[in-house]
Image 1 (cartoon, rainbow, N blue to C red):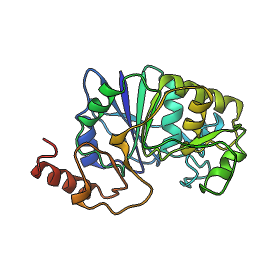
Image 2 (cartoon, rainbow, N blue to C red):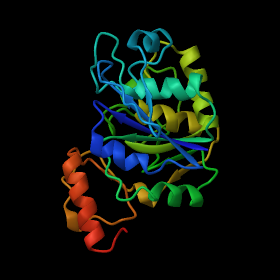
Image 3 (cartoon, rainbow, N blue to C red):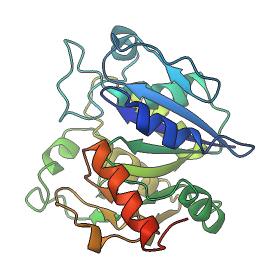
Length: 249
């Protein structure tokens, strides 16, 4: 079984309806939100997980995404989702973490990717390794330097990535041993995978996961995930464009 975890500030109905279509014998869909005040979704096909910020912080699951300043505990949907699959639900062989501003052209893409990479521990857009400890090539290397993680370090954009149960266990062990140390999502998974000789694959389908870009319809294809596309309406329009051009069904 594989879980898909949508990470969002507030769940949009159109996006929830899109991801619900993945529900079946091989997938379960989860939704994690930044704001605890967000109304719960009552739906047989949505696992809406509500978690207390203080509970997350007390267990060391906070500031996994330091870019998000959310409340006194600095707990975001990332922290909640990582805690959930590390401690509360270990049933899945793999978990997809997907931010809500990732454009997924067709829900069947997950099954297509998973069928080609059934055993890899980490699927991501890239896997950039820092052997020397230099701190200039990437803005967040200084966080890695004070994280109690020895060299080498590695990083990638992780707005969309797939993580194995084995790697989730290593993340949990790191949190237990380094409760208050930095744990930024863009280096913690890749560095722990590197240190433990786990399989990491840079997947072409994730090559559209970049930091900043204004995507135009003509740049898109039906086999690639794209970031950022912050407007859910624009995501819907992109799907219509790709369908009209027979890129997706």
